[in-house]
Length: 211
Length: 348
Image (tube, rainbow over all chains, first blue to last red; front, top):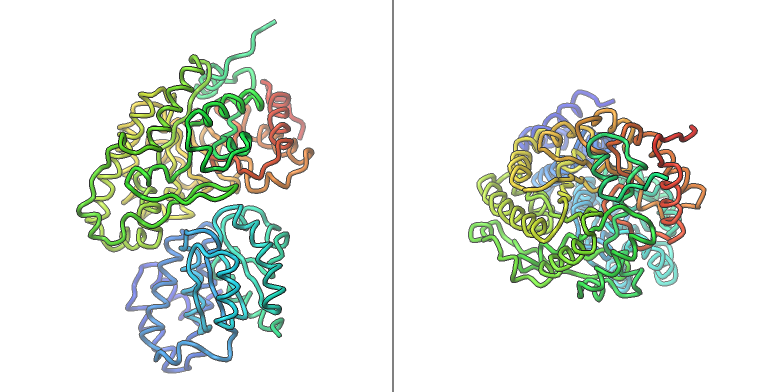
């Protein structure tokens, strides 16, 4: 259940009303700092994710909501406060595929919440991802896939990651994982997100498991 | 003894919302033909004779009721000069966007179909399979909806920004894509395609909310479907159908592909007498199905959606994945032949 302020922000997002969202987030930051700002964004975007899951919002709307929030946060926070160094370092990659919309949505949400985030980009393979994780000191890797063969190839990545970068947690998302519920476990991933906003709960959960 | 219907008779009967001898089965084999032929995906689609041979062989092997001349969606991107990336054991994808900036739309022209080798190969496959079918098997050609094609032309993110914030260029792109789509559908029908499968994933409210769709893509779909001079099957490629079902019916489409997350019986209830339901076995799950599960899934869909005709058994996405074992496909076929005989009597 959203409180009136959260509902007002959700209504603003639904109308693509950037000004209302920016004003509301600015007020929240002024009164409660970056913690309350992140809390508000998470609460509202989790509701957005649930609405998509239940068929009440489209992917296009979810995408626009993430973009509006990210834009607002960039305007409110000084660049050096965008990233909270006490949060785990998150890496993103579109694994073997080139359709990056899902990952763009997740990236917007994760950035809005203050996680330090680095992106390996689309169409990357196992070796590129391993190097990326090492160079950027990634602690949680978010992988998006579109095709079934790419989803199956995650297994080899998980195995090699365990050898080269033990302790790194791998979270997967994308159509094959949505269409086959237990596929993420079969390929050895640590978590699976059914929608972009799942990432907040997953990251919170994983923070306790990180070395 | 009464002769079984030909595939064409069976399909026409069910499209007329009557019960044929048994439920028609459309196993939509595209890249699966490469697996069957022992070729790489790229090699397989490089020669029309590979596809022709595999289609004829697969139809006999699994007693499926159509030929499917679809290669891969990105064939249409090749027509516009775009690149295609081939993967082992998966569908080819479009590569770098052909429309990198909004201004690129200002100078965009409809490409000449005959200058694209992969388009010519699809046409040759259609012509040869039409000849082999002798009117007894329907041939399903494929086009992308003008509204969904831009995801491959410019990337999804850039397309959403166009859709929301640059309506004049969106309208111009739709006009060009519509003309391309009509040319491409006409070429396939002329080569012998019986019907056109109109892939339109963005019409699903999973992707674009219905209100936005009705004011942007829908008018384009209505006018495009009206211009296609043959029967149309609309497929939302795993996207939910129910909230836009009536809209799709009004485009004149005769068939609707149903997603794996929807109840085909519910869709059938709404569609009865108006549009034939195609679906909805979950292709992503198929590689892990046991034979018992397979039979159970087929029986369940038949029980839900087959009574009264107006139903074709198929997968939910419009393509059988490479990873599906032969035994599962055989079980789908055998169960359909057995439990799909009309009047259907499948125990709950």
